[in-house]
Length: 74
Image (cartoon, rainbow, N blue to C red):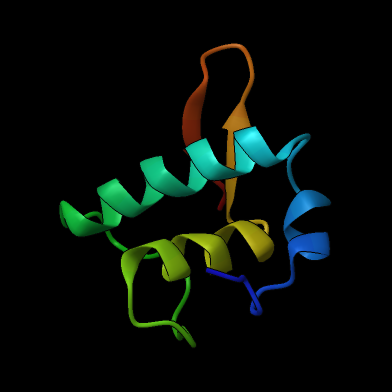
């Protein structure tokens, strides 16, 4: 699978590694699937992982290195 949107360069500018990106996207996708409200009004992607990546690219979801948890930015 290739990521075309959002671009990998934009995503990696938001996190420090591909590993962190994949963990963050997976955690956020699980949250979205569990019913957590999205942080964006519109998405290009239909699947939870794509939506999570869009939120990360927009700077709405970040990693808290002290707790290794997903943080939602206001």
